[in-house]
Length: 273
Image (cartoon, rainbow, N blue to C red; front, side, top):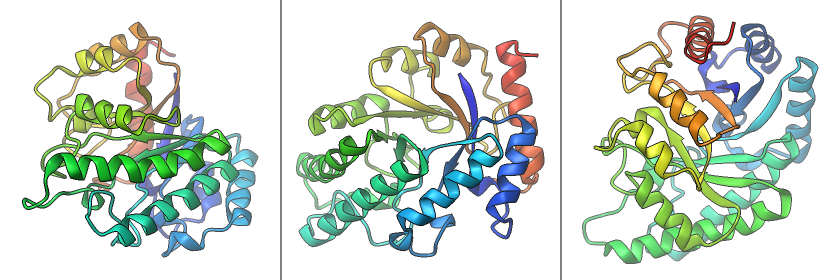
């Protein structure tokens, strides 16, 4: 397992070079990019932009592992809506991000975006589920052309009313039925499930391809009540060999503190000097 950190951890006024420099200095191997941090309208991110980011990251010894927070901007994208045009434009944007991801050298697209999947009470659940699967499948087909994998992310009930558990999300992946659609696991989100996190990891071993390290208090690993010893043990048991990617939502302690304290704690739990 290697270490990554999400780029929005850092202040928005930091040049990408400075973000890369600090992440590398803290000991990370890769960055995970949120498209909305790159351009106000991520539809305008070009292949040249993606290549430039890849070259900058490489100059600091970093990889770009992929993208997350895919549907934050523009805010009207949606996957469960009955509006066929809205879903069509969402899929079009997803296909664009697949190409951008590939040009950065990334291979993972974490699909969370809770507001872009919420369902309304008047929508029949299984119909909404089918619409979501059909939309994601369109993007997965494009991802498959470039060696990119969509990692669908279960999220807690405070964030969304659709795909709240790993089990439900695996069912969606099965419905999508494409090798480029898999599962993503996030500690904060898993903490909302009734099942212990270590058991979720074991039960999802055939599906998950990426992992976010954080805490329900919105800070980094080790900065809250969740203990990572059983989590790391379960990840090792299922032979997970991807990234542990630090994703926080409370930036008040400062990016440099979050970056360094998170990786220090993970290394401590993993027994890495």
